[in-house]
Length: 217
Image 1 (cartoon, rainbow, N blue to C red):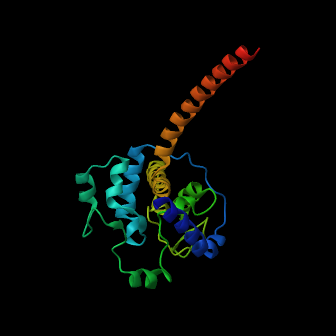
Image 2: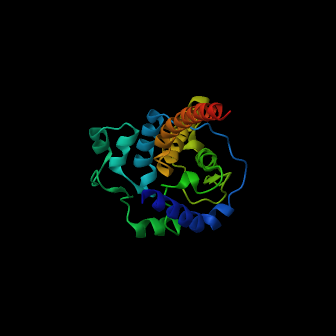
Image 3: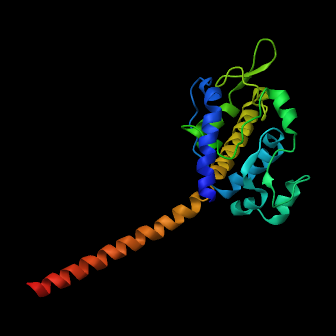
């Protein structure tokens, strides 16, 4: 059922974001996604403290964060009025978010698979802000974007500041890649056992074949 919801959600998200994403321009930055639970945990903390002011992750529950190594106490420490069994929904009222941005900010659950090279897109978007001559922030990848510079990339003044923001953006990507496909790690582990099983089965069948045909001849 969860897999079906993810597929349906991805289709809906692609449809709803088609027009907005078409406005994006510029080159994507390549990112090697850190799939460690440490990176995912850091990303979860950033998403919950920053991104969830406007965005929700409706296909993920707070209790699901235990799958990336967080214990119950860690999760509870990050919650406000939510319960651990709740879905990761923004606490900002819908009407406030719609009034601020002209429409409801997209759900982030499936953002990493909502378009081709999703991880590169998210990372580039977060690290492509700059100040225009009028003092307002804009984004090279998505000119005219209404989303604020959440990680304050445009305010970074030193190489160390830039590296820190880029590291945060990378962690956000790691977390959103996980939310888009929480069962990926389990499938990969299972895939190893399946391959080993098929190799052993193939060898056994080959030996049986040789034994049978030896008797025929």
